[in-house]
Structure formats: C-alpha cells, structure tokens
Image 1: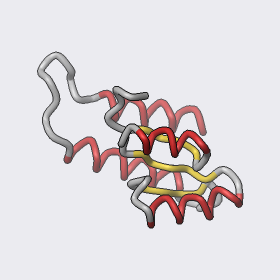
Image 2 (image 1 turned 180 degrees about the horizontal axis):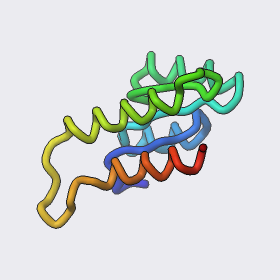
Image 3 (image 1 turned 30 degrees about the vertical axis):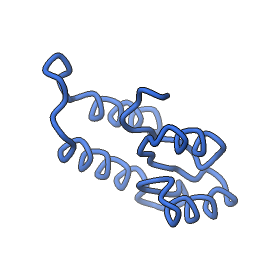
Length: 97
C-alpha cells in the first residue's frame, strides 16, 4: 500500500490507511453509510474522486476518471510502460460485468 501511486477503495477504514500514506484514492460506496463517508472524504481531501454503485453510470464514470489520471500523470520510469492503470481499470470493468 505504501508504494502505491493510486488506489481504488471502498469508503471504509482502508480509506484512512491510504490517507495516512498520502495515496490518491478513488472511493466507491457499496452501502448507504459509505455514501456519507465519500462526501466527507472528498470535502476533507482524503479521496480524489468518489462514486456510488447506485449510480447508473458508475462504471463509465470510474473508467473515464482513471483514464484521465493515467493520461495526465507525470511520466514514469522507462522500465514501467505506464499502462498499469489502464490494465487495472479494464480488469475491474470485466469483473463487474
């Protein structure tokens, strides 16, 4: 976790652990109480983006946001191809289909 450059997490206790390590986190609410947690985490800058699976377009929103991050982050070391984020989001979308 400490070496991550980006995380995708539910709005649970893990969000606070990621915050401790200053990892930019995309939060996903999977229950009603997490909707409130996401709002608070965004207001307090613990998370960089939040969404709820109750939204009809949550998969598209998540996909587009992660692609935006991947296209706009600083260049990574040459031994890393920079496609990791896109591969992760593709796998997530496939899993939730």
